[in-house]
Amino acid sequence: MWEKDVNINEVKEILCKSNVYFGVGAIEKIDDIVQKLKEKDIKKVIVISGKGAYKITGAWDYVEKALIKHNVSYTNYAKCSPNPTTTQIDEATKQAVEFGAQAVIGIGGGSAIDTAKSTAILIKNQDYNADNLYEGTFTPNSAVPIVAINLTHGTGTEANRFAVATITSKDYKPAIAYDCIYPMYSIDDPNLTVKLSSDQTRYVSIDAINHVIEAATSKVASPFAITLAKETIELVKKYLPAALDNPSDLEARYYLLYASLLGGICFDNGLLHYTHALEHPLSALQHDLSHGLGLAMLLPSVIKNIYPAKSNVLAYILSPIAPGLKGTPDEAQIAGDKVYEWLKSVGVGEKLKDKGFMDNDVQKLTYLAFNTPSLGGLLAIAPTEANETSVMEIYKTSL
Image 1: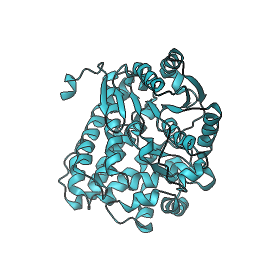
Image 2: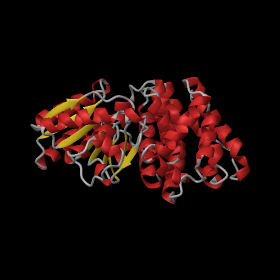
Image 3: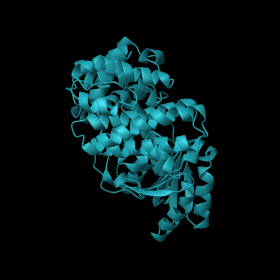
Image 4: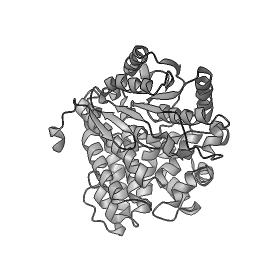
């Protein structure tokens, strides 16, 4: 119960590659952040957000006040959708360049912050567009400063170098990873997450679980990733039911947000493989599919696939949600079933067919998993051989 000795109302500065202000009331640090931007002679910013959450959560009140106080002009691109598109990134970039923005503030979950990261690159690299960025036409080495104000507890993007967007014309949903898009400053304030719906609360927390399971079992996993994975899963197991029972429980939101932050740092180190590589085609085809739900529907089958290769690590990190595993390769089916039972216990028991995917979709999904830029790189570091047969099998058994 070490958590009881932590004062959740005391804002901490967590130093990773980004400076993360973490804790209840952290949003008030936006005043200091804007002042520091102004000291760097930044006079104009673009604020990138979704359509409403940035205001509903109260985050915008603090941001606008700080910008006005320090005489920093702003323009707001407020059109980010879940599973943001390269078209939206190009729109935001055009708006930013025309305004003369020298920095980007992203307010939202992964969608808004990833759009902000991508826009920050393109402001500095105006000879290219977002399709070029996500298809790997060029390798950026610079971006304007990024500030991330996080409104969910799942993505971890506020503390890592990743971003994701969908190229709708090709049904591609690639990821990018560049050092130039680590946010300069990030804010993780539990107060900003209490208005998440029950489903959003579930799905974003499951995203964090998937981040660490993959990062701890990839071919490049380190002991650090494994340590972070166990703690992340422990915290989600403990505090997700509390947040579902009482959405305003700030202690529960604090530790789910901390779990998400750990997850983001974890996969910044250990990277990702099967579950994310196979989910991206799902939400590329169904743009309204929650990323976390897609991951949840795939996870039990992925566990069954990788367990024989990583049985000791998985028995260790999964123990909070799948107790009793001995770490022997023959437990793969049991491990997958235990994970599915935990998912059902938090209200996520759907299968792919429940969301409209059918047997005849498997071939296209498999094609996209191997042909979408960047996803092949994830599959290459999976702990078992990722070929068309194994990927199709995961999809089929997830139906």
